[in-house]
Structure formats: structure tokens, C-alpha cells
Figure 1: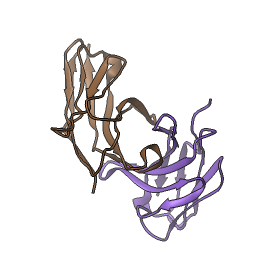
Figure 2: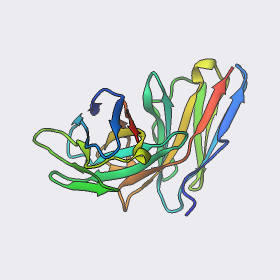
Figure 3: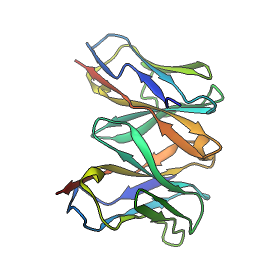
Length: 113
Length: 114
């Protein structure tokens, strides 16, 4: 299996622009998580889905952030408009109920200028 | 709520030294406990896990034992290598296991010098 796939791996954009991050979870996993990693705040959960349904979005910073999971093999995290404080590494992870483990993608490093 | 506390870093060791990284937790119920490792420029990889009290997780020479009485899950390795240089995160799962939120510690950077 290719593991969790994220794109793009790096994104540089200007303040005010829309940013869309993409994730393809491991086939057969039924949960998907979006985390953000910064030096100041460490790893934070933004939102997660079970069976494509959002379960907990309490970590989403504000209305500028939105996430969707239209089917079991694809999710997006959108930031509109982006701000410099959104600069971080964004990880997607998929959860396997059988092994009781979350598997992380390589991350998207976002820089907002 | 759930929380994970890791010892302050960074940690620098010489090759073949003994490693201990402390991790304690606060949780309701009976969470699973994990150690993840992050190599430079990469995502997090599961290093080992334990799902119930007194379980010992092990992988690549690393070990950690789920101690309910001390709410701890300390990571140990008898002889570290330069290739072990990375950031190590302790984490616990919510009641839903892999289908629920992971709560992470702040992470600790390990540097191993030849």
C-alpha cells in the first residue's frame, strides 16, 4: 500500500489567497484526521471524520478553515482567506480499527507570505 | 480532559548510550498509548504501542511499558544509534481507539553523536 498520500508537499502562497490541501487515506481505513504542527503549539487536531462524516471539528481555528470528505478515498482542507499565522505543517492521518493505529501522511508544509 | 506530558528536551547522547524518555498521561477510561517518531522532513511514524495495562510495546530495540499505577509510558533503548536521531512523541487515544482523537505530548528531539 502506498500509505497516506498528501498533496501538495509544499505550498507557498500570499496572504488572502485560497489554499486547498488534499489527502488520500489508506484504503479500508474508516477514519481520517487533519492535524497541524507548529513550533509554538505542537501537534493539534483540527478535525476528524468517521465513515466520511465529520465527528469533531472543535480544533478548526476559525471560519476561514473548512474540511470535506466527499468519499472514503479523498479529503480536502481549505483555508480561505489564508493568513501568515496559518503557516505550519499540515498532516493527514487515517485510522485503522483493526490495528487500532493511526497512520500519518508526509505532510504539507504551508507558508503564507 | 486527556493530556500527555513529556520530559523537556532536547536530548543529546553518544552512540551506544542508554536512552530513557519519560512520558506521563492523564486520561479517563483506558486509552491506548503510543510512541511516534518523526525523522527530519518526514511525517510521523508509529514506533510502538500498548493497548492495556502492563502491556509492553517494542520495535527496533525500543521498548515502553504501559504502567497504569504510575500513569506512565516511558520509552527506553539500551544502545542508541546515530540513525535514531529524530523527534519522539508520546500520545494516547480517546475511547474510540484509532477512530478517535490522538492527544500528543510536545515531543522531544533526540540527537545521537558518533
